[in-house]
Length: 437
Image 1 (cartoon, rainbow, N blue to C red):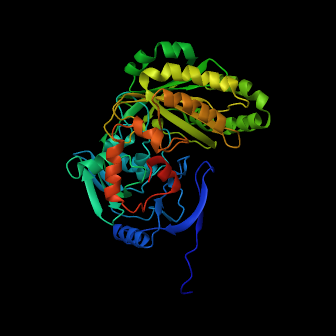
Image 2 (cartoon, rainbow, N blue to C red):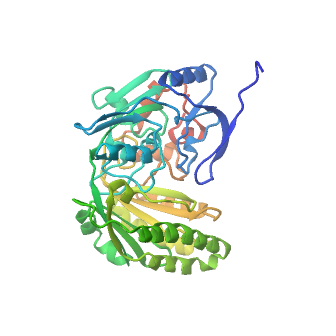
Image 3 (cartoon, one colour):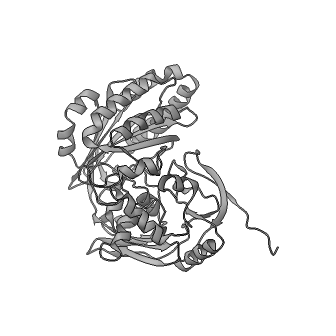
């Protein structure tokens, strides 16, 4: 019927802690996006682009119009000789990894989830672990975005370099990313070594451990002095593949099915949480195996949780972890998830958590349905005092006044934002809190 207002469509993120409804936009071309941006600006409206919903904050939560890029087809261009791949920004990392493998290529590093879109992963500073690697946005060689004025802007280190420095980790505040060119490497095999260990031993040997491996991380199990260490290193041949049975047992049965059951028990009977954590710390035994890089980096995550993660100066890790242990012991409720610790190299992206410094990341989680805010806010106070920067896709309570001193190029980002989106077409209440007006 003429004059009928467009209906809104509900949306929820992966964790289920962010929910809303908005008018949905599904552009099939860059021209469609330009038209949608201009129409929204002229109507005084706002657009947020939603990817796979793997952020825990309201960063993708639309209060007017939600744009999804799954139908956007800008084509795929592969330059195997130069190891450059250009893909639509709405492509998932899982699809990207398969595409790269077919061309004998790979991303140099990945996080442990591959469900995110390329745009969502780079815009929030998603990262893996490895002292020689920055966040995934450091692999971006060029990008194209539609700005709040409807301009289609191509950016690289040579073309619009100020926008490039801002837009690789932009929180979706500068425009709609439509296409991304990534610098890749030749496909490679990883050897994974996973082992339980005493926390104190790992902390004592940590500098040497980080130096000795291409990628290293560990998980601390609350109420214990135990961790699970994971080290991944490049090797020439996939000569020790994980058996299907062992992979299912560890990665599906123990890490998902059994762990989900244990979390449900812990939620129902919180007093059992320390016992569950102690059992979990010893359930995953030592293993070594080889595999295609993305298959080793990425794992299945079916147990739902909420998460906060802080990037800290690497030297502050010991103090932060000691404070976190005291916080966990003093909470009026129990923690059911292990704490993840990862490492990245410094980069030059203005709003990257790793801007200008080597970082250690502490990620804290809580099972869905369990209380978490006192836990997360207590740790946030410690992390903030230690110079921590919150992961843009993970829960935190910082605002523009608090964040500005943590980022040396904060004002420069604001200047680019004022130029590219003067009418704040891409704002929402969360982004206004983070970046200011």
